[in-house]
Length: 460
Image 1 (cartoon, rainbow, N blue to C red):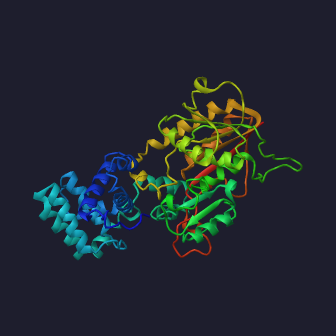
Image 2: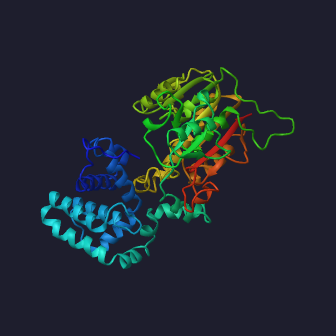
Image 3: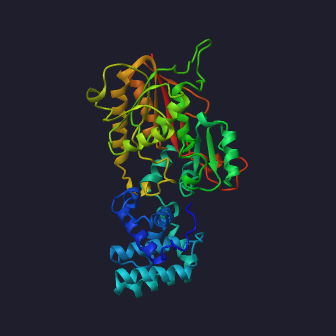
């Protein structure tokens, strides 16, 4: 949430924000990620354009259906993107701008870009205002418009989660909470909640499963958070905060045999974070281990490794950072076995759509089996690098079973020396459903966690 503009920095005109938002939406429709596009957006426009783009992308299926009903003949792409943008922002329940104001500003933006289309755009948008209730009802008879996800995505969720699929689609339409991870080197969760209150920032604990997680009542710039620059807290979703304690042995499996021990990793343990960027889980491992791990962080994207280094530096933590494809062990591994490996594998990101609403429109059906192949290749390449008795934590921010339980079931069939450790909570598929919101939350409040999958494998 950005602060109010000062007189020296007035808010950009709405028509300008709408024009850039339309460009962002069109870029996503052309296959470009919103994050990449926003990185090139003028800095003074970026916060406003991002906020509008998130809203539009959550309504894109419905807005496109209504635009097609109002204007069956496709207008030029830039005009179409502006119409879709305006229609999504005019949707029932969106109250950021008065309807006629938004129409006037959208038409202004069309006039600047395609003067001959201004009258057409004005007629389309004003008709939508007049007939909104009927047009919305008609559009939502189409599942793509009703759920604002591609049909193939809906079909995959229905097959994987026949009882929960509609709830998952609806959860993706919610704005996610901003969640922090409190650094235990600078105090506990209760103390940091008190510091937030003193700063006038409302927040609450995420729940007993997440002992370092604080959920803010409203998103805030990180500069407003007490001690952020000094490493007292980091931004990280609660579900992602499960990785480090699971791998380090700070949570005990449910399936231990009588008398069987489950030790925490000792100081100096050799640990690999195989797909580390942007470094949140890397840093959390060292936070919980008191900076005592012999830690190697790999990532195939050398540019994204800068974020890993920045995170470690801000938190005062250590670790070797190296650009490498974890599958190519001959190119980076020195042959010394690891005590523990974290494999946060590349995936569809189907569990974090509420944070990245463009993902549903960027993915294609063929991406899922292709990503599953990469995940299997990573598992096969890294398993030989693990010590006997060592542990590997497989994680994806996905709710698709082919990237989660199906992947691990297949791996266990191939490897007789692998055992899946079972936990009563915090492993397996974590679903971002609204009924996972805190018990004292308001009706319809977003779930605490993003969608994730965890499997902890032990080597015989």
